[in-house]
Image (cartoon, rainbow, N blue to C red):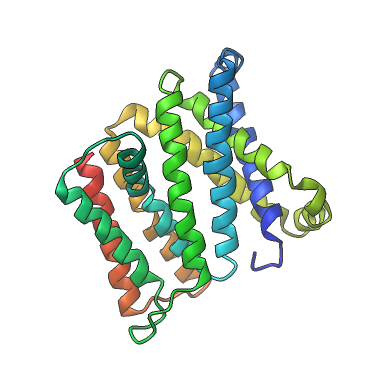
Length: 262
């Protein structure tokens, strides 16, 4: 993005590389036949989940990063479990204790603080609202996955999500094909690296959930913004104000508490 590549090409190429890696991993494990074994309802559900969670959500995040920092986007990503909990409460009728409501409120307050420029300026820019829009989309996609895909193995869901995200972004291909070709020529190493990271993350995430407790895996995911912030500070010179640091800490602490209560 800092090199001038448009948002749609970035989203499409990274999603495509991620889908190829996830699909290759599934084939390497000799589980490719499980994709063909899904019925129509399951196929449509997994593609819808992918279109929402791996297509529209990354696109909105990339659009926001044309102005805001990658660590801010990563912080919103760490809040996805809270969004899923709210969606499950509203759509599935799942219940949780009063403390959980309080922790979700702390997450929201922390996200607001991180996106305030100063204590005297209470305005929130459009990147905040764009990233906020990803929360209900993730919550909805996770609820759909829970209702429709419980009997499908996690690795198949990972591949289906990647394919769904790639397909929904490919619908706009006729309008951004020239920009895509230009972007690939200009920044292909970065696009390949970003897509590879997404693919490895998708594969590793389900491996972690298969071999450890969900709360531990969620805790590791919640700490990802710290790594993103450290890399941004080293490579791009990103700095946070005291107010933003307070919000950052609030979000991570609340997410870790939510994960341990899951």
